[in-house]
Structure formats: C-alpha cells, structure tokens
Image (cartoon, rainbow, N blue to C red; front, side):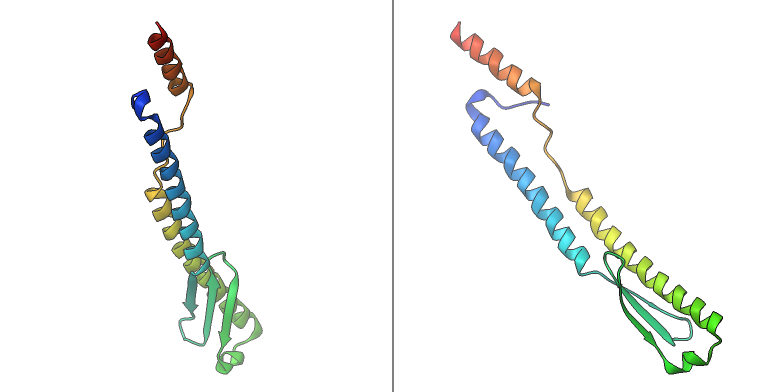
Length: 128
C-alpha cells in the first residue's frame, strides 16, 4: 500500500475517514431496504397466500374459505409450504440487497504500523 507524502497526510486521513463513513451509510441504507422487503407466495390453486418480511417474520396469511374443505393434514401441509415459500422469497430478496451492499462496500486498507513507521522515519530524516 502506498501512502501520500507527509504534506498530504491530513487530506489522506480525511478521505480515509470519509470512505469509511460512506460504507457505513450504504450499509445502513441496505439494512433499511431489507426491513422493507416483502416475500410473497401463493399456493398452486390460489387458495392460500402468505407474506414474510426481510427478517423472515410472517406478516400475512390469507386462507380462502374453499381451502377449509381440504382434510386437516393436507391443509396443514399446504399452509406450511406457502409460509415457507414466502419466507424463502423474502430471504432471497434480502440476500440480494445484502450482496449488492457488500459488493459495493470498499473499505479502505487499514492503517498499520507501516504508515506510522514511514512517518517516524521521515521525521528523523528531516531532523538530520
């Protein structure tokens, strides 16, 4: 990693901090977007519909009264399947947002002892 000359340290460090702030802002925006996610699913016959949020919580279940004609085991299976499908849809959408945010997040290289060592060595040369 190359560092600017000591004359430009202030600008370098300001840009370093600004880059970190941008990444944090973008990640917070992604979190907000994930909170707005809604996963949807419908049974093949259209008698059951479900929705889930970006954290996988179930937010809605609609059961058409005609579905109540199904036997208990079949209805239970169908309800479970549509709920899981809604959660999977929400998880997929949330993951897309997270992947996009992480792909765009370019954290600056961490400042390590090299930066400080270069500055100390430069200061020593300047004194001689």
